[in-house]
Length: 121
Image 1 (cartoon, one colour):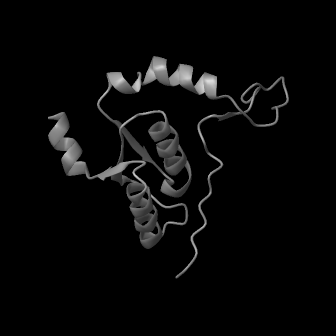
Image 2 (tube, helix red, strand yellow):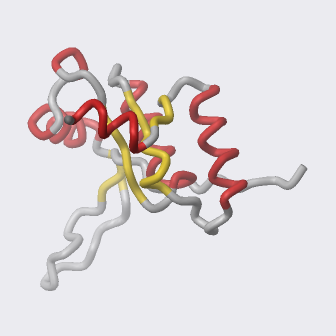
């Protein structure tokens, strides 16, 4: 079996101070769990107050994986919209492998557009 490397540097609790400020040099990345919690509470809501968090994004084996793990560990019910994600290398089989691993570990459930469309109509 081919080894698939999962790049997990995109955890949402990692920040870099001064990013986007042209007058200051960006600082070394560091974890700021409290800032992420504050952002989640104000933007998404607390886990007990919402039904699901539905993730979409370009890299299921980077950003989506890390965010699903982080949200799951905080008590959110996470779903990943399959048609709205891709694998870092663009491989359909790698994407499927990662999605199966995510579901097997119960970090998130995989849903399809039709399921989401039925919910929002």
